[in-house]
Length: 231
Ligand code: ATP
Image (cartoon, rainbow, N blue to C red; front, side, top):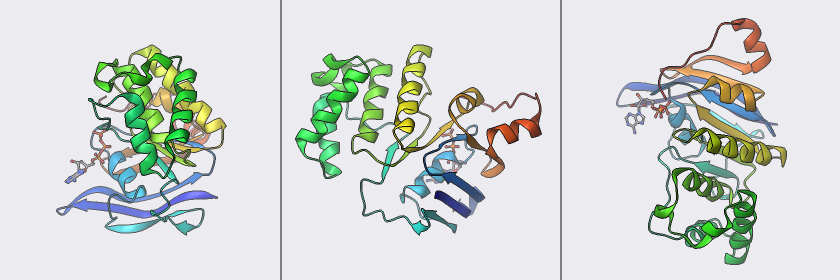
């Protein structure tokens, strides 16, 4: 079963941002969206999430239209991030957990598991604005998966982080995938996709340049380096 995008397009005021995208993301896989600035990655994610209405085309998940009333289906880490700087970590996560229908105890328990996993249990009662960028991004990831979603969409989860934190975040994403979640993430960097994903697509100016299994794409591209502008 898959997440399937068929002929998916989006225009803003007559300008095409996403142009006829057709993709299959197999359940349980890790899928990379590679593309530079303005390629259409965020717009595509926002359509999958039901935050934007497609101009054309449709999206199915396991053969059916996504029911956005089932709040625990999808987890989302937005590119613009979304934590409240003045809240303490536990307050923020409880609040988000409760929006997803979780009890305070369940949200606390999962927060503690992840803080232990990241080896930063002391951050539980710190204000988000007091944390380093890397630690804020760990909390952002926890926020997006607190309700244990089966489909996780991460918009540029590794951007703006130092190499050590990129590795920590990658390892957490791998673990979520190995526990059974389907993960889609966007990036400007081919090396992230090659390390983590089985399948990928490359978007450029809203168009799908290439998509499919990475080993097959590699055969087509040969040893040519795939370079995406910008970061
Ligand atoms: P980046 O890596 O810079 O985040 P992206 O691949 O996520 O880029 P999008 O944010 O999806 O790209 O943008 C695709 C195009 O759609 C861009 O030209 C952008 O200016 C345009 N766009 C996105 N959202 C809107 C909007 N709400 N109104 C008008 N134009 C928009």
